[in-house]
Length: 155
Image (cartoon, rainbow, N blue to C red; front, side, top):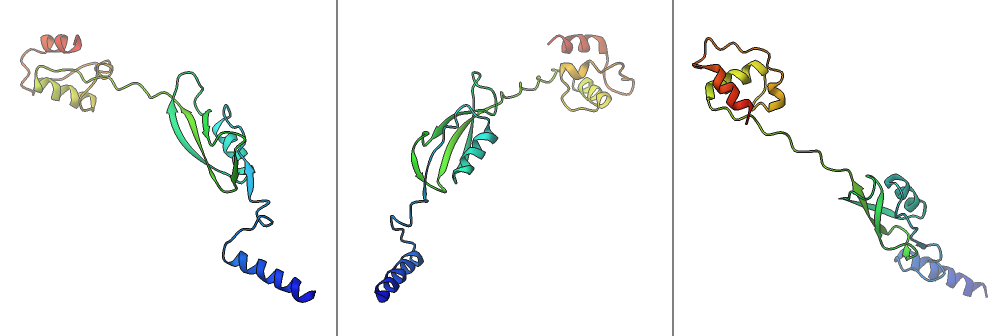
């Protein structure tokens, strides 16, 4: 009898060494995917980690769900999976910031250079131009500053 028990233990040990999982050994290897849709990203990741699962995130903009909230998951909740499996989550991304304003179109390149030097910026925008209080242009090739400034600020 003791030889049989020793043989069974040796067989179980050998199976373990070769990575073969028997039903008796695998009882704790499975878990069920929790429902994390609607949770904040951090809470969803914690819920998955608590079950021995790994979260993978993809961000997708939607204006119907607050940023940072899980909108869908794969596999679905209730699915039986092996611990250590990855659950793919789609998380609502914040809206993109608006594009920067276009630069002012200067008809005279010398005027543009003088304004850029005065403001300390390249390709100034209309908002940048609001900071222009004065412009010293005696040493430049600008003949008449007023028509150029009026034309460029109204474009």
